[in-house]
Image 1 (cartoon, rainbow, N blue to C red):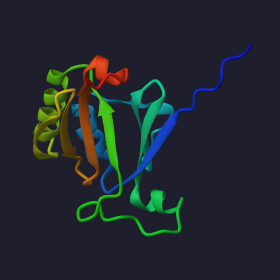
Image 2: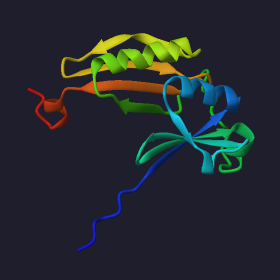
Image 3: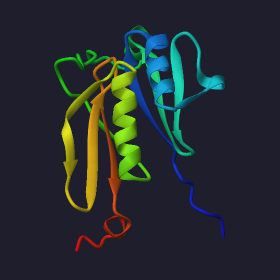
Image 4: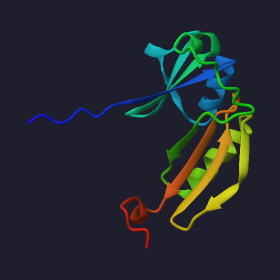
Length: 141
């Protein structure tokens, strides 16, 4: 019996300045897949199965007839990434601020989940969170 295919997720985001955006995410510890990175796009590796395709706005526009959202004034998506600890959540928020991002609000502590949010240089919203293992398994106490 063969295993079912596990789909990979590629979130495509328009960016104004690809080198600056790559520098920002490199500072946060992300790496880029060189086979899928050039002067129009960068493939940021989030995990083995998850990627962010950072596309220059003109290149991004070639994939859709809709207008590109002005992420400085509108929210198009909230990208949430799980972290291995509360400390790692705080570290990612600090790195984002240090690299020129904008940290959103104060940390949110829901008891079973701890969350921080930041905007990248293009205004895209990223949320980093840690969820207690029991909560992740469905035991919300």
